[in-house]
Length: 168
Image (cartoon, rainbow, N blue to C red; front, side, top):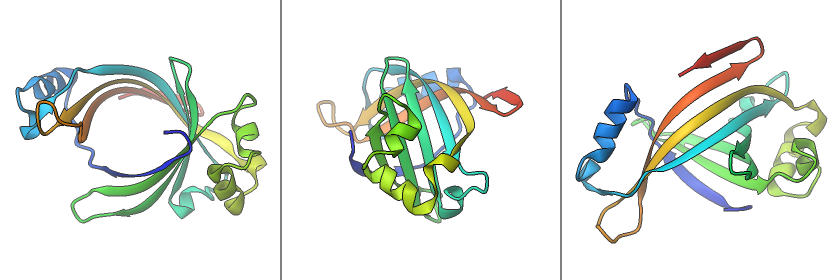
């Protein structure tokens, strides 16, 4: 959703390998729900902050997501809290990246630009890390013809930081 806010509740559970994910997602009624057809996505996410981590220190993540199909968005995520069960509650705001990239997008008047400018100078932002993601996703719904209410994903990731890269 362009320029919209949403509340996300995320519970990350590791799956040991792709075969285990395929077995889990192919079960007839995964988590008591019906699985929809898998979708695939290739993307790069680049994370930005200042050298003194001004955003991170406030529980904020600024990410530039570039999808293989051409869509580019800037996403600001604010961690609202984590429950005792490990469920993270976050508020995310997205805005499309304009022609000039990150700095041109933040020079505008989007909600993301306003929030970042309240914390730091836009020129002080630097890329800290990037991840290349190959993602398989399946939506789950409680009834065969119902609306999807949950999403599971299996990611193969290569993380890049200054001087290092590592596959996960």
